[in-house]
Image (cartoon, rainbow, N blue to C red; front, top):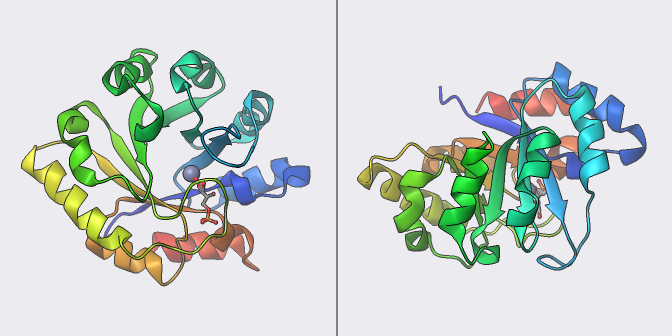
Length: 217
Ligand code: DX5
Ligand code: ZN
């Protein structure tokens, strides 16, 4: 059985009951908390910032996997680390000096990830694949939870797996957007290591059982 990591996205939690939802994730088979930070510039939506992330961190018993959908992420790396980040993913499309930002993330002691939009081809990662720990592959256009999965993602997962193997790199493939009981197994079969799930988990009658179902893929 593949040991897929499950990262529920707190974006779909009930913010008026955040402590309850964080503890639900603690008690589940989830591996990470996925934290979506949106600035209303890089994406057409605003999610939440440092105070909310720090409140999540206060109760979270698992690593925080932070996905920055913001411009100029290099300005805030230290603050995200201080707010509890274990992994920090910045968008390829938001970084002019991507290699520098990757090392900034590593220098503060976090795992470095690159997030890519659905239109960004895998081959653009070639010159940094050995420098990173994670690729957060968007399978929807970033900005909102609960969107429809883009089918082309399966081929991109296979292409990324090949790039990682060719370069003998040690990189996790994380898929973000539209993960459910149909897309999840196909993604794992294609080579995904980490599944992010927001709407599918939090709209379920039994979120703990839904997380377990994904974990058992
Ligand atoms: C989208 C976010 C995702 C989102 C996934 O911009 O990056 O993490 O919460 O949500 P679902 O699983 O609902 O597609
Ligand atoms: Zn995300």
